[in-house]
Length: 348
Image (cartoon, rainbow, N blue to C red; front, top):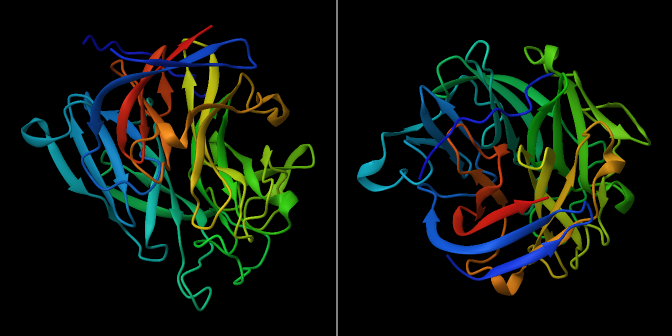
């Protein structure tokens, strides 16, 4: 297939299931031959192009980069190279790299990770945090820049969701008009603080991000990223502390240049412990600075339509040369926990 370079927003064969979206566009989920990511997937898997090669990051507490001609050449003899990411600090291990941004001006690779500290509760519950890193060599080695997002609320070690006692995590990052925007899952505090939330950081602050990220709360981008309050864009219906949690989570964002909008895919868990997936949902906006502008989430896949359970971490990988998980066009591959059985086709 042809691969054509497409610009992102910058700093300044099968059965179709159609979902009619509130923003007057349609997305079709089209069955396609299976594609499997090359390494174990336990988070969103960001991608970037470096030296004209497609690089995919897969994480499961540690992170592996696989590079090849494109997303369809990342297995077997077609792999150009596979390497483990090296980080200059153990302060925030284990970590999961969930978002990247390759600066077209200087070639630096900026990355953001989900960290799960140990020793929070006597059982397996932890409280995730989000941190930043930078690489000067295309993702082989990173310098840890520290944490940028953490929850205001203490751990609730009686939480019954099976994984988290509070925290911020399971996120993605994009860029619009001088800001990096974070869209993440808030797991703690009162139920009105839980769900899918947003924060942002000025692009100019990327070299010293700790303390430079501000959460969206009560109509303003003014709460500190470390410890501040949030107003979720998509609030939880039932608390993450309950056994029957009902909430969207794990948002992955991309700029869709065919639509001229930002599109988010996310899972909805309901209504039993350990996060069973009820469905995969899509929402969009043209203006990240206005969280009220997101469209109402629409389901594009039900749990029954997802062959591989539990159906976590929905994301796209665009099909054209230059496309990634954060920039895509009319047609992209839809992956769920590292497996793609579908294409997504967007039409205005």
